[in-house]
Amino acid sequence: MGARERPSQEALRAKDAQDDPRRDDSVTIRKVVELTFHDTDIRVESTGNGREALLRIAATKPDLVLADVIMPEPSGYEICRAVKSSDHPVPVLLLAGAFEPFDPERAKECGADGHVVKPFESRSLLERALALLESLARAPRPRLPRARRQRSGIAARRAGGR
Image (cartoon, rainbow, N blue to C red):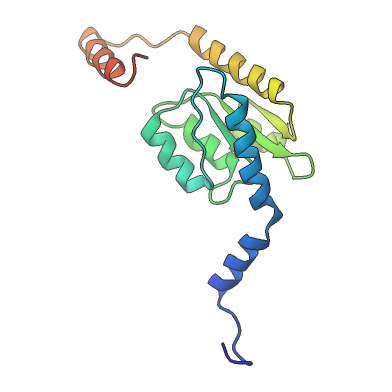
């Protein structure tokens, strides 16, 4: 690059991403979440951005979603809205840093089931997640026509017996 040339927008974004202190924080938080659920029967899948999260959610049909409110493209609020309006709506816990902006009104509007402030105690996150999963298990399921129930049952057994 010559002395007069300015760096491209892509180069600036890449540099900003490298210098962004949240990048390390998000990797650390993802690792903490994975370790929190390590000794349980809950499998954790984590992603580095919202687009990847939405793709993984659509593919795996999770029972619970944890989404960081400042997750890049789309934000945790937008992920929550997408999950809640999908064919497979599940509980969503939003994660927000103690010094990051959290908008309780926006969380309510997108249908979040709660939020946890980072840094958090692993035990409290586990308890919140288990409570949401238990409430999901107790929730009445819609009755489907008999033929449709049978097809759904076969698909569920193939997908791991849920």
